[in-house]
Image 1 (cartoon, helix red, strand yellow):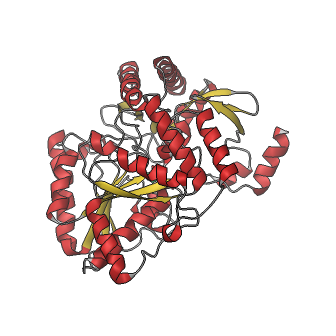
Image 2 (cartoon, protein in one colour; image 1 turned 180 degrees about the vertical axis):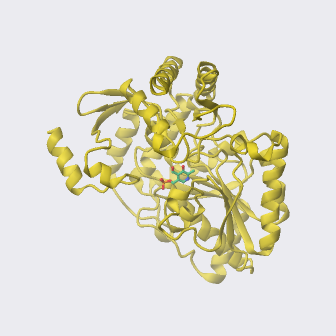
Image 3 (tube, helix red, strand yellow; image 1 turned 30 degrees about the horizontal axis):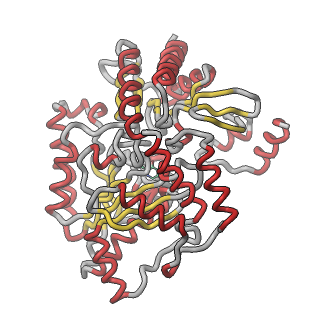
Amino acid sequence: TNDQLSQWDRDTFFHPSTHLAQHARGESANRIIKTASGVYIEDRDGNRMLDAFAGLYCVNVGYGRPEIAEAIADQAKELAYYHSYVGHGTEASITLAKMVVDRAPANMSKVYFGLGGSDANETNIKLVWYINNVLGRPQKKKIISRWRGYHGSGLITGSLTGLGLFHAKFDLPLAGILHTEAPYYYRRPDLNMSEADFTAHCASELEAMIEREGADTIAAFIAEPLLGTGGIVPPPAGYWAAIQPILKKHDIILIADEVVTGFGRLGTMFGSAHYDIEPDIITIAKGLTSAYAPLSGSIISDKLWKVLEEGTDTYGPFGHGWTYSAHPIGAAAGVANLKLIDSLGLVDNAGITGAYLNTTMEAALADHPHVGEVRGEGMLCSVELVRDRDTRTFFDAGDKFAARVVAAMLKRGVIARAMPQGDIIGFAPPLCLTKSEADTIVSATVDALNEVSA
Ligand code: PLP
């Protein structure tokens, strides 16, 4: 029964990112999700909800796709597991590697498979360190990421993440991980700058940090094409065009963390194409399998691959691997998923219906006194809530304004996400969203906001 499951849950289940004391007291959500189809999920009480966040922005093709379920079942029956160490592969993992590299930017040549976005970024940092060792510059080791960036929850990746919650009480960030200005124009009215000047400011902050630390100590810069968990914030115009020459000038590897933006979310197969980014390494996860099974990857450029390959002749194997690297079931899910993304035209739909969601949301909320900014790109949208539009003042943290709006949306059958820092409501629906489903999301947002503002 639901009561029994809830009791077991409280007795035994340690949930991530959860206020444990509130959960134990029964004050937080204890929804037991049972099934899902398309953009809708259903709980054990029979409540049907439009999932406007695609789980954790990962179910790109939508729920309940039999093609992926069958590929997983077939793979489990034929070969549930074999490892990928010392040159082993499976039909599914090799096929998926080929499909990923075929879809990646032209300079990309190989993919290393992991389990989730966090471990893929751990792999990336070790790759960069190994490569700089091979190149005879082991001291070129520090990594720059950005405040408000999100790159995972591990020790290195939690350090790369630029959100206080992921550092506090863990003694993070680790030494050698630095954070530079977030390209978050709306939140820097104090600088009193035009958007173009703010872009130049972000670039000069980065360069000043590199010069202060010494370029010969900085190995890599890691960033999402568009800030995701930090608030769904598209960069100001010209940002990437200003950042990349600085990295090139100082011979700093660029890691594009495309865990959210990879596989169509911005209306292009990769977010790098959308912003003209030329990364050396790309992190992928989420949309790689649409979360039907855990799988991630690090795609690396031909140039870095050559160094790595030659390095192993001198230093022996790249000493890094997970039992589940390139797990055949994840790989089979990935192959079926990428085929569906193509055959259903989901990349194009993300661009078209995503633009519709963004413009409709913006039009509906343009005059709302508590809406500071509506922003987004492709099938990503966010609404930043403020106490006062003119001064952009926050609500008090204790108000939990965004969380209350999200709860009011849920009553209306729509799931959105209160982003972890600030009063920001995030939307990242499956890429198969229709315009009428977008309308449902927008009207639930408006009604919920009016209810909570009243
Ligand atoms: N990188 C980005 C940009 C992410 O958004 C996430 C997760 O949301 C991660 C990395 C970490 O991925 P995972 O939660 O699969 O470890």
